[in-house]
Length: 160
Image (cartoon, rainbow, N blue to C red; front, side):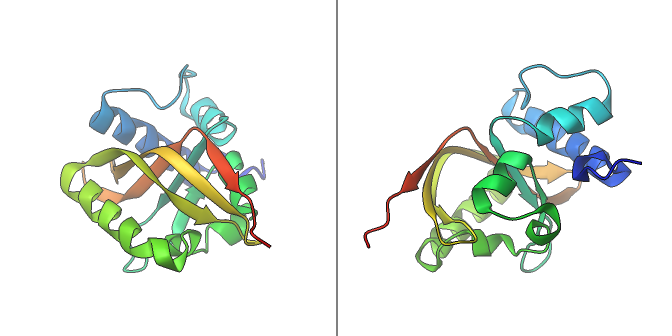
């Protein structure tokens, strides 16, 4: 049995929801090449060279997915990241804009070209751009969270 976080039946299903919801809202594929079976797709998304994160529908949403690039950028392991309220990834001064973004995506299904500042576990600050945020749908079409992806990020130098 694999200990890779992407390899559980729940995460393989979640990956399918991420991929199909992204396709539904944007008309594009999240992965450049889609390996045939769901387990290979889950592996490809987890090891993709861009960031993918998602959170659930709790009142204070908790991250329920972060691919390896996201885990490295935010400086968490899987177990820690998937217990983190997603609001905690944004600086307090960015949280109102983040909430507005989430609400806009809930209304429209997705938004693109968001940018903002986030911070890692150790306090490193980074600028995210070209963010696409979308609602994640179950197979029956019900909302089960939101996800975001972005291709690049820029570390912000400390002023100290």
